[in-house]
Length: 197
Image 1 (tube, helix red, strand yellow):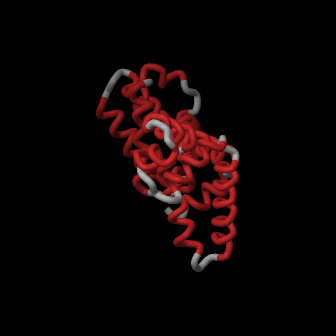
Image 2 (cartoon, one colour):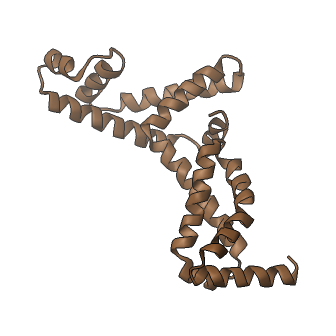
């Protein structure tokens, strides 16, 4: 980076540290495109990538008083973007809605891509494995809810238990399955699958 550009950036960072919104906007305009491209390598959803980039800048703005203590601002900014991308992927791996969306995407993609068909089978097997590890009563309640699509009231009547107990079993089962899948699914597979979402 040329010395003049480095000095301009240092002056801009000083202005941001002092609370200048104009300087912050200039910083945002300078880095936004590069950060978006970088985050998009991990997260294939433009909307999510854009939100993560905004989160990076929000972190910079809220911690602006410390900005002058950073030796290499460029590297620091990209490290935050990297960490936010990985955090998003990890959190997505634990999110039930993400798993449902992921499963739909796998099924659609599996019709014409052999690699995806293999991943679909592996994913389905991991879900079945997680379900098999549930307690017998929890497994039965979860199966009646998800596979037979019975309501909580119907399950309560059929098993002669309270509706609250049914709800507790469903919540415990979902939490257990999410945690099991989060441990089992490789981040590399998530990267590949997120590229199709």
